[in-house]
Amino acid sequence: MGLVRTLLPVSRAAARLSASPGRRLHGAALMRCLALDWVLLRPPPPHRRLAWAEEAVAVYRALVEREDPRPEHRDLLARGLTQHAFALLLVGRCEQALTAMDASLAVPGARWSPAQRAFLSHLRAQAQFGLGRLDEALDSAAQCVAAYRRPLPARRERATGGLPGALRTHALVLGALDRREESVAVYEECAGLLRAMSLRESARMMLVRPRVLSELTTGLRALGRYEEALSVGREARDAADPILAWAVPDAVQPVRVRLLEDLARCLEATGDRTGARTRAEEAVAEARALTVRNRAAGEPWLSVTLDCLADQLGELGSRAEELTARQEAVDLYTALAAERPDVYDPLLAACLERLADGHRAAGDGRAEVRATERGVAAYRRAADLDPAVHEPQLARALTDLSLCRQGDGDHDGAIGAAREAVALTRRPAESDWTAHHAPTARRLRVLGRALSRGGHHGEAVACYTESESILVGESAGPEADRLASALAATRSGLARALDAVARAHLADGRSADAVTALRSLLALSRRTGQTYVHARCVSAFAHARAEHRDAVVRAWERATGEGFPTFVFRYSGERSGDRRPDGT
Image (cartoon, rainbow, N blue to C red; front, side, top):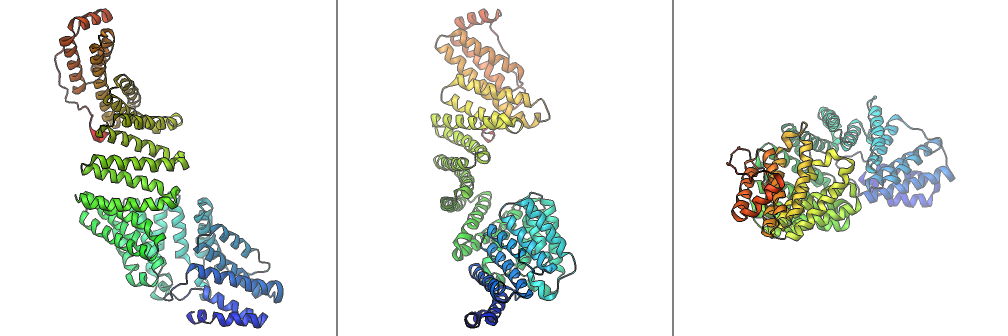
């Protein structure tokens, strides 16, 4: 084939000098270059393959329409259009590829063998998959697999494809449809076929095998079958050996990067942190090499692998190295988001969240606030493009920002972020309350805390009261245990806010309003067994009696007709739930 490529200028000249015989010779040479049946010959770049396919189509179209419309030329025109569709797929022009496939089927009088029709179905499935038309792609992939399950095609037609490649496409589509177990089952069948092949047969599948095994590793990891994933992953790594990576770097290097990242995550899940770090470092090195060769293909993978490496470094306590890796990943995602904000702004925001977590773990509150603010800005840009998907993420990030600002002493900023988070959460909760009741309650609690710290105790009471009402209503069912900690945290915050309101009213001489707050606090203490709430109640009543005895006692008696309460402190052993990991 290399010789045929070299002689293409000669056949091109013959086509110009001798119309029909020269065109036939040149068309045969082009089709020979497009049929990549010798595995050790490095494939041509996609743009060159596309140029050859376009030229072959032009040659055979001229023969059919103007010079020699014999049946074999019609057959070759149809095959040339199929190769044109294949080349268009390689450069990502899926819609045009489908048009070329339709044109190949429309060639009048063209004869199609079963193998050629199966190959066309395979290409159609890949094009539909690339366009996101997954249901159509699933039908086409199933038809292709069914066609290849019939007797093998003639040897001269095997270069058009085979059952392993069709199974891989079928598994890819199933995975995209989130039918993960079915996808893994198809991958396992495909891997079994590849393992059973003779050396001669597997030579044609040298690029399919590492891809299938790597994607099977990813699927097993997604199902939590980590030991199996590690076993298959080692086999995939042997298949994607450095020699093959050197021969076909653009095809194999991304596979190796993805595989090493999967292996690192599986080792992490099985508790082998040191091994996970080693694999993550190898993945970063492979991604850097890929970036040197092909920036567009390498930088997204480099970002992913740096994030993986940072996770391992964080678990091993290497905070400085973790922050360095996370910052590099953020810088890469920032550059990528400038080019493709619809794809990379959400990824940038998630990476900034993890960077903020790293700064918090390192005790750098100011850096945590800055990273969180940048994450909110990225989620805001993403929400502008797709509100339904990204507004919930923006609300969560705003909640985190409020907590960061509270810790940094920026009370006004914390209140503003928390108010926006609550407003964003209320909108989807109106249509899907079951999914959003818990986030609504939590964000009301965070807003209540921010308001309390900013001195707005009355508004804080309203937020905590609504949060408690939501959680009490939802705790009546099977979610009681899951919501118990959140309810305890809310009641603790409400007790603090009511105490603060009562003290403020007493300080201003508004005894009647103070009694109203004290009565609410007493009712709260009686309906919960929390030690913290009861202690807060005892403290509030003791303070009121000690500092404002006459006024508060008279106001209490007027409001209730009873004497001012006295207490014996009780200990229930129930925790308040008011801790930072719960977000309050």
